[in-house]
Image (cartoon, rainbow, N blue to C red; front, side, top):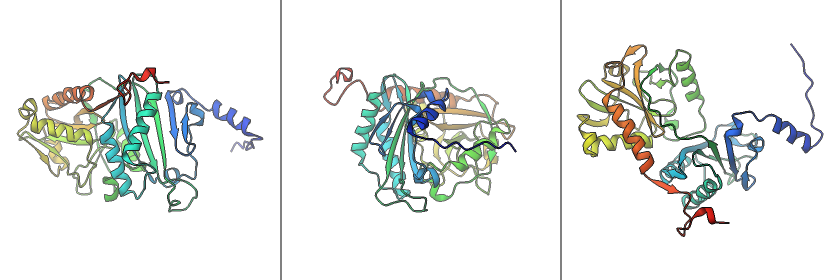
Length: 334
């Protein structure tokens, strides 16, 4: 075993130098971070850190949401804030601000970012102060991060996927927690077989969800089926997809009915289409556990949903960052 002396930093200058040297190419995509711990915005990726005693770090006791900014517009911000607060309630985390103030903070933070397209992640932690199991009361923290990159407009033609073992406990189903160990294991298990991210199933073989998205099938009878939200997270994207197929004329022509149902893996093998739906995208699954699904190509429902979700993304619920609360050009605000 090679032994290397553990360096003791003599002062803050040495620590800062070491942190700056640790920044890699991917870190440079981090445009800015807000930390309620320090009460401001950080632009140096080397300093975008969270204390080790934060319970989101050492206990996974935190919740989060992700949304996109495209052409200086935030998409579905209010819906994500509402879900963040629902998750916080399940996780017994009292946010340091209310929904209205958080929305204003996120808009102000996003306005600070000068590129037109980026990802926006919001983390709500139960806070730091100890390494125990329970957090310090009334010490929750907020962290935002902006990550450079445009919304992916490429439409997947089809992927191979695998049903994987890890199963979430009931409490984790209904909140968007930072405890993603089972999701990570599921994605790794699928990836090792040449899959995308894995589809989790319960012990009886009924499909649940992918690590970061919902799943749906078009049955042999033409039904659009989604696993019950009592067993999976109620994803904003799959809810939009279901409404489109239920309520819009072009969507209603594609399927015979839309509803929740328990979907066994055998049902998926015999389906016309299987798809992963999340993050305002629809990804067709053309092979599941090496079984060809339908024709083995992207189906008409997945194709229609890809077009609808992109259209809804660019035309839907948005917050314009270049217009302030008074209707003035935000670029002129000093």
